[in-house]
Image (tube, rainbow, N blue to C red):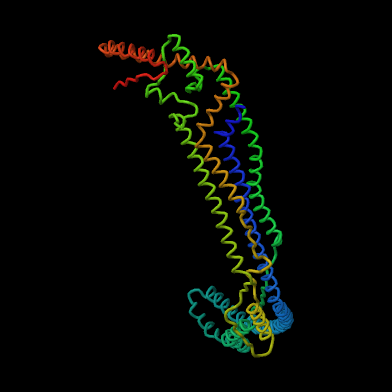
Length: 513
């Protein structure tokens, strides 16, 4: 029985707020995540569709380039054959030039060598004659001694040796011819061969680069599926967080039961625990003690009335006011949170719904201006340029669907019934927060009904506590103001006389300022 007031007070408010959060999570939050997931799926669908159309367009545009590539390959093969023939021609010319050069070199070497041989052979008689006259002059000088001047006759006949050099004239002609050829013919021939070499030295290279990179480790569909699985896993984490909330209600019930057991134990063991209520039983005990001549407690002073109150009083003490204020603030905090989440859910739905209504037809991206290019002429180059222009025309005329009805987003509409239930739960939580102090008083009433003897002992303790507080206050006043002792005694006597004359508890209350 003690659990029921707890359920309809603080724990009831917490349980309602827990239901509010659970419903908020399973309703607007889940719907918002569903719309986000649908939006992601729609965007990825549109991207995949555009990529597929772009890939198809590129394949169509690349088809003419394949024929141009074949022409380029044919040109390369023809150029290679022509280069082979040119290489053979150059090799023949080079060999011919080398043969001519070798012939001229041999002629020059022959002329030079024949001159040297001729000079060496025909110059021997002159040298022998000259050596003979030189030897005769030496012998003459040795024999005549003082009369060596007579030997000058020998020197007079020495020039006759020059007659032997008449044959050397024939050796001078080849040497002259060789020197003349070297001076007149060597430089022009070398320059001519160098010019021929420069004319025939050339590089012929043909480089063709045609690279189309359209490879990928994974297809676009696989990438899209990976992105969607990642988005779903992120959202699934939030969905998994909502599952433990379903079991939190049982935990709250268990805590409520534990709090009820703790309240019962404190009620039975601690006389000061929650013992501030002036009940009807307390009034009966007060009349019984007063009739036996005991000190009276009622009526309470204004200061005591702020602390002790009746169970059915609409007035709250300071502690109850503080708890009610905290609960109301908590409810309004949940109200702000729920309002933001619900507003976000409706805002996302409204935006996606506007997109859904505005984009009901396919949105196709087309070229704003078409440019036609014509290629005139014949030959390989003109054919290649025509293929390039054909690819350009295909790219111009290609249309790419940016937004398709196949990928059109259908948003999930928020559940208005859930919103009304959320408001109803917050209203109940606010009501329980405002009536928390009154409902919690029922716990003491239940304990008093179940344990009347213990309740009587607690009331006696409360009565004695009030008397002790008054006695302590009176002693403090007497110690501070001795002149009031006589006045207070007289007033107590008047109250006793009034009690004896009335007998109904209508006492004179004196207020000391």
